[in-house]
Image (cartoon, rainbow, N blue to C red; front, side):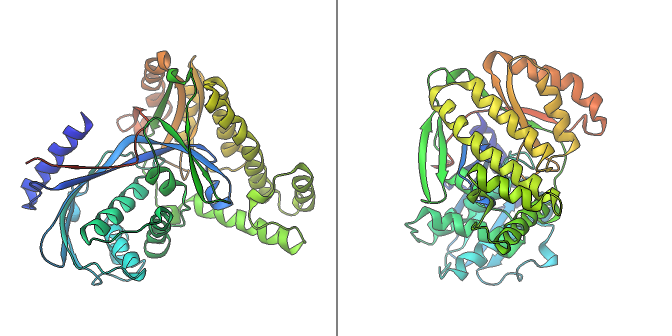
Length: 410
C-alpha cells in the first residue's frame, strides 16, 4: 500500500515538473530503529538495530546527457535541482545550507573525490515519508543517491563498507554534519524480519532472528512533530566532542584507550571515573552511559535471540533513562512521549531516538497494547505539548529490507 501511495506522489510530481519517469526504476531505502547502542557508533561500541518501513523512494532513469535533473516531492519550493557532475558548490557552502540539493551535490563530490567518473546524467524524482529526526532520513537519502548514481554509471563497488564510508563522508565532509556510521550500516545491511548486529572490531555484520515469542513484539515510533536542526547545530555535536575530550584526557593520564568503548572492565572504568569525577563530572556521566549500555547490550542480544521481549524492552527503557540522565541528549517533547508511553500496560520500553533534542521517540510494545498506546498519546500529548498538537504522529513499524529496487510499469 505504501509503495502504491508513493508511486502516486512520484507520478504527480512528474506531471507537475515535466520530468519523465515513465518505465523508470525505483530505488527504495528504509529508515532504521536502533536497539543499541544509541550514540555508540562514534564511541566504538557494537551496534544492533533493524530496518523499518518508513522510506525514501527515488524514481530515476538515465537521460542520455551528462546533466542531472532532480526534484523532491517533499520540498517542491526548492524546484528542480540541475547540475553537471563536478559543477557544484564547494563543501559546506552557505548557498545550499538550507536546500536538500546539498545531498545530491555531496554525493557527486564524494564519488568524484573517490575517483569515480559520473558521465551519465539522470532524471529523477524523490519522495519520502520518514519522520524528521530519529529514523535516519538523511542517511537513507544519501545511500539512495549513492547507489543510484553508481548504478546509472555502471560502477560496481565490491565492498559494502566502502558505500558506508562514502555515505558518512557526504555528511561529514560536504554537508558538515558530524554523524557516525550507525544509520548507514543499519539501513544498507537491513534484512526483513532480522536484527542487524555490527561488530566494529571485525567490521562484520551478523543477522539475528528474533526468537520464538518475538512475534508479539511491535516497534512503535512516536514522532513529536518537532523539527530537529542538523547534527552540526545540535547537542549531538557537543556530546561527540565531550566523548573525544575524555578519551584524550584519559590517554594523557596513561590510560590505554582509543575510544570510550575500550572501557569494558570494572577496574578500568572505576579508575577513570576516580581520576576525573571531580575535575570533569559531566564527562564521567558520558562514560557512565556508554559503559553501562555496553554491559546491557549483551543482555539485550541474548534476550532477542530467545524471544524474551520483556527483557529486550527493559534494556531499551534503561538505555532511555541513561540517555536522558547521563548522556543528556534528549529533549522535553521526546521525554513527554516517553512519559506517556511508560504509563501504558504492555509498553515494554521507551526512549528517545537518533541524534537527540527533537524528532521522535520509540517504544517496544506488545501487539495487543499498540492501540492503547496510540489512544494514550492522542489523549495526553496535545495537553502536555500543545504547540505540536496538530503535528505529532504515531507509527507502527515492520522490520524490512534496507534497500529494494523495482520497475515502474508505466
